[in-house]
Length: 271
Image 1 (cartoon, rainbow, N blue to C red):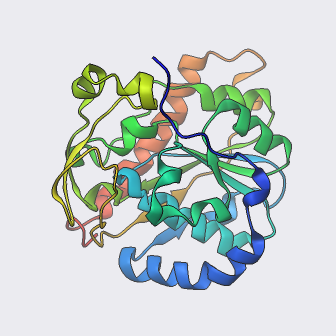
Image 2 (cartoon, helix red, strand yellow):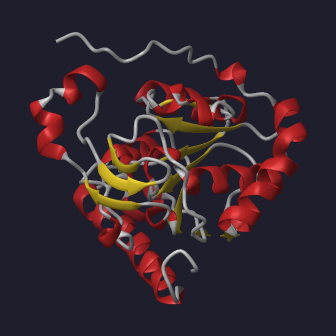
Image 3 (cartoon, helix red, strand yellow):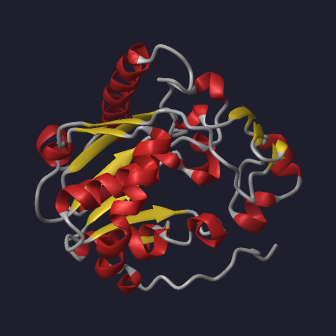
């Protein structure tokens, strides 16, 4: 079956430092007010050169964790530092997220990941993708990449530091009920749109929200993000890593951090 995904321009030059400088204060003010964004550990990120930032993902298609981190990174390192983010092509067609292109968001693919790193840029990826971002709210404190190890191979092959970025709060911006994997498979959404889920949630303004294709108004849940120390995969695991071991250890470190962040929270949404 032919894919029905929109064809999007992957011109990396669409990232616009002038746009970032102009709108960053306003966007950060909104994020600070609505999500009370708390981004910790940005100083751990190497100040120059290529780096692969790997995050857990929350909040459905509106991805508040991504927005908060992109804004914080741009404010900390400045608009001039090359910084790109990979996202599903359907996210980039959502009207409410029009600004992501100007901040450096491009379609998720191994080719684009390699291109960004070879340009000497910082690159943010979410291995869990649509599977993780639509997990039930009851699994808010779980890192779930569904066993995907491609991010490890990219960092190892391109000899760039891997920096884990752990966030919490996004899964409280709506009540996510189920991924809807069986329904997605039955409707062949994987073949048509590269979607393995058809999520079901309760969200503003729709009430019952199936698919989240039109987005939603996120509840003002507190977003907390912790950046961890860089990992040199070649130094830690050698020239021919056991990818299962590397995956278990890196994801395990992220999970332990997420568990600590969860323990800090007093109430849902309030944080």
